[in-house]
Image 1 (spheres, rainbow, N blue to C red):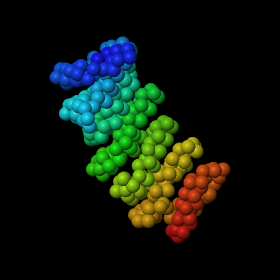
Image 2 (tube, rainbow, N blue to C red):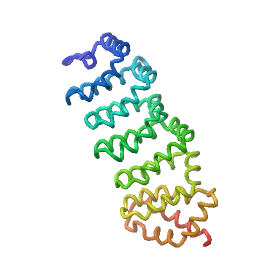
Image 3 (cartoon, one colour):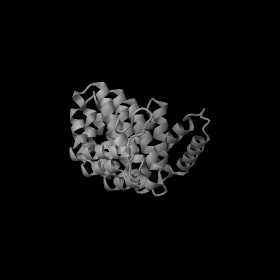
Image 4 (tube, one colour):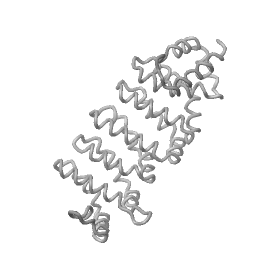
Length: 284
């Protein structure tokens, strides 16, 4: 009631400020995350609402709880590890979602060693938890573009070693979502440096060409949106160029028969453009 008011009355700012200060001084957020697994469903919902309200609280342009969490990064870690406890995973996932709206907390998330637990959370949990974990991973990468671009440049090897596990997943949803996210990142100009590095690696090209052969048309389509970046790159590495030339005939046969009934003008134009580039390549 302190945070939300009572009945038709708005919360009293002084009481909210007092509550927040008590929460910071007594490490209430850490305590609530610790006891959450032992609480009933409704109590877990109440804790989630408390976290969201505290995080959204602002004084002018400041968000005091965001600053507090940034100074106490173990809170982010505890929230992430909620995915390891099915009973609270969606509650802590909602709290994490709110944290990721703020760039300084999204940065904590991306640079945390806990980020590399996400293949486990996405691959080996229930469908709802898996989707929630992937959504939060995606939000951290697309909501704060400049910060995420710097992160991907600095942590390229570590991140893509982890992300490749998702691209290679045997789970249809995981693989499709991962290919879609990869395509979004590679065509975003904020990620130009990462894009050039990614499409210069022939192993990445082989992986995407394998995805083009998937039985699912949806996965093929997401793979196409990544494949086109390799082909359109005017400064292909010799190894990438060699693979495309060596497979020229098969690629053309595939693309010319790929989604022939599509009415999406953007896709049709892109497909034709890629066909033209491949056709212009000499056979090896």
